[in-house]
Image (cartoon, rainbow, N blue to C red; front, side, top):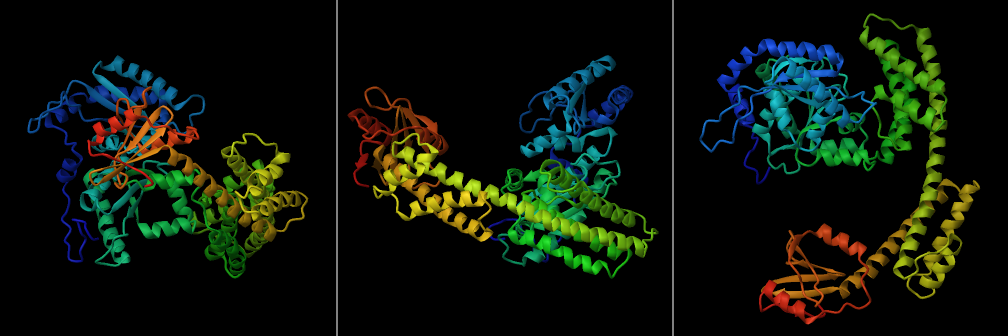
Amino acid sequence: MAGKKSRVSKKEVIKPTTKEEVLKTMGMQMPEEAQKRLKEIKSGVEQFRKEVLKKFDKYISGMALLPPAKKTEQKPGEKPEFDLEKINVFVLVDDSDSRKMSKEELRIKLSSIISSIAAGIDKNLVPQTMLVSELWQNCFDGKYEILQLIAMSAPVHDSGMLAAVKLAEVHKTMVLKKFERYIVSYVLAGSLIQGKATEKSDVDVFIVIDDTDVKRMSRAELKDKLRAIIIGMGIEAGDLTGIKNKINIQVYILTDFWDSIREANPIIFTFLRDGVPFYDRGTFMPWKQLLRIGKIRPSAEAIDLYMSTGDQMLKRSHLKLREMGMEDMFWAIITPSQAALMLYGVPPPTPRETTEVMRELFVKKERLLEDEYVGILEKIINTRKDLEHNPKRDITGSEIDALLKDSEKYLKRIEKLFKQIQKMKEEESMVHTYENVVTMIRDVLKIEGIERVDDAEIVKVFEDELISKGKIPAKFLRTLNEIIKAKKDYAAGKLTKAEVERVKTSSEQFVRFLVEYMQRKRGKEVEKAKIRIKYGKKYGEVLLLGENAFIIHDVDSEAKKVSKAKITPIGGLGAIKDASLEEMETELAKTKIPERVFIKEKIFEDLKQMFGKEVEILISY
């Protein structure tokens, strides 16, 4: 990778990472005095553990002794002093099924009760209560300090969560120490995040590697080389922490990861939806937010691919028994089910979640599907699970025949469901197309000074004010009439799918033209309010917006410096304050620019003070 100091070459020798190096990197080595103090308070902590568990039982995900806090900030080179009197205990609470109160109310209430328990045992016992959702939110916000504290803590009770976090955090530290320039995201996922972890659960992590600047080796070589080293570090992290849980490490290169998103890979969709970043260079969280608001959607090709596999797989299942036969029947009904969900607008869930999502959306919410068909899906998923976890279990030919019959029945119904969803989406699309065009026309008319227009008058006013006056080409009047007619025809069931697509295409062109028209119109208005200046070799702009003036100091600079000042009653500039482009755009959007903008002499004097006596005002720039 060009321009990067740290390179992975084919001859590179990886030196083993010692425990001391990892602890030093994390900046969390515990002093010997603190270790002695922990032994002295063992009985009090044990009593605290028992009373908290007696009170809250299964809701406590973990409790651990935290390293002592530093008394004061030490100067460079000074030995830090620690408060060894205070016993800091971290209490992690599972709030996944909290329904009766808000997260904040729950945290405050639990903190109060747990603090009371601690005070009754030892006044120096200081519990720090945190909800699991709070822990994950810290990670979403890029606040990873709590992960380091957990990694250095001494657990006194753990349902599996603390061990998993510690193992992943130590492994992450080792990976970043060696390959930080290449790591895009390090994300914890799997049953741990979903609140289904146990003491023996595997720790699932996903690591995304930036391969966009590979020069010395192929992308496949880079992935294989780093993957081998990173997995080796996973074993080493287990040895360092003494945690025996298996760490499952999935390594993706950035380009492959993007392809998986476009191809609607259910594993990647689940990873984006549920994953919690332990490290992120600003890539994972934007993807997660885009998925959350519905901007990452499967392509039409991916939907067609999921739908088309059903019949093919079902034919193959007639020829097999047991494992192969059941695998094919399982995927034969899962993939079309996920295709139907994708067509509806939902990212494909994991196979385990598909039944629940199908029932909630299509049976209960939309009433498009009968529950007996979801029962067929459930039956085949459970049969596959039974065979998978019980290798001695046999399946008879009659059972296969019955399942095949159910599968065929299910697929026929899903094909009908597909048509129902398509019709529903077409209707939504037609209404959206009409409303979008009418809204844009209203916005254009507002710019022209016409504030309100009735729906019945929209075509006439559009023709009189925009078409007849030559502001907008006449062909768009025909487009508007076609859209209105198409909406009526669709409601009457007279419009074909091809006609719907044609109307959508013409409406997109219409809307694009209206947007450009408004931008040009607004641009001309803004030009009236601009003063362009030159000072030295630089060019700047002053934008007069009502009571405020915004100054762009160098229009050619990538990192544009923006200032803001009040316009005084005598036409000059008041106190200059720092501002931003976003603030200027917001002010511009809400300010109506008058037909004429007058510039008074005082502002020129203020510009001289700001940019120097040689400042020039540019005309017809």
